[in-house]
Image (cartoon, rainbow, N blue to C red):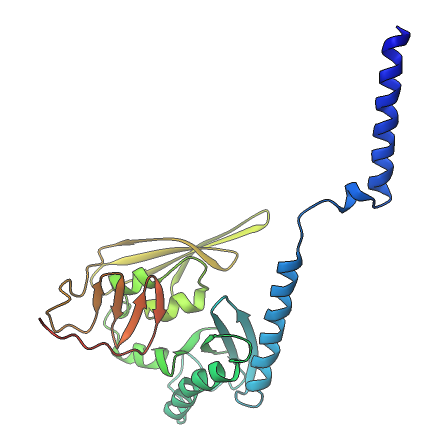
Amino acid sequence: MRKLLIPLLFCALLLTACGGQEADGGPAAAAGPKRTSSAVQDEKKEAVRSAVKSALAGTFDGELTVRVRTDRVEVSVLLHDPAYSADAEPPADWAEMKEETAETTLSLSEALKDLGEYRALIYLMDQQESILLTAFNGRAAFDKFEKRSGQSGGTEGLTLAAFDSVIEGMGYEEVCGLLGGEGELLSSVEDGEVFTEIYSWSGADGASVTVVFENGAMASKSQVGLEPVFDDFGGGSSSGGSFGGVAVLPGGSVSIGGGSIVGVEVEVTPR
């Protein structure tokens, strides 16, 4: 019995010593994943946010929210002037504001060059947070007033190419810009630390797209009834389509490998 007690006492002393090290912040407490890279990334994102707000100071009469992604910055502007409303007619200076906002996306990308290669997206919203304008790469990708006046029962930008350009991690505003309008909220559920929202977009021809967002980022998507605008790279005169991993969106927008590059003109030469 004494022979058995000696090893047990020795193990107990070892456990007590280890416990003391953890409580005192010794080697056991220090063990764990290193967060150096995350801290560096957070610091860089904060530097980009500050640079964006500095570059846009005095440009818009509104409240700015800046989101920094891996390769782009998304600036949401909540306009103070109630004259800018999705329920009203476009203000007299809307065309000028639209052009200036599109140009600002280019100047903002240029201003951020010292911090990295960032594409800039700007969303103008009214006091109800309805998206009035999505501007990207020097042009307007979505105009609420233009869409409303020309709409014929569905979302005009709802194409298979636009659907393919919606990729994991995108925010709601960017998805709206690609699909040509705002979605209809079907449900929102908070389960622990995950907040899930499901939105639906409907086309004039009965097609539909459903997108699931988790904590504000696109997590999954599905579609019914969408057809390619054209399937032959060498022929066809339609305004958009997809081929070889490259999706050409209506109006000259291009998606390469799932990422969108808006405003790039592509010339198709028949063989």
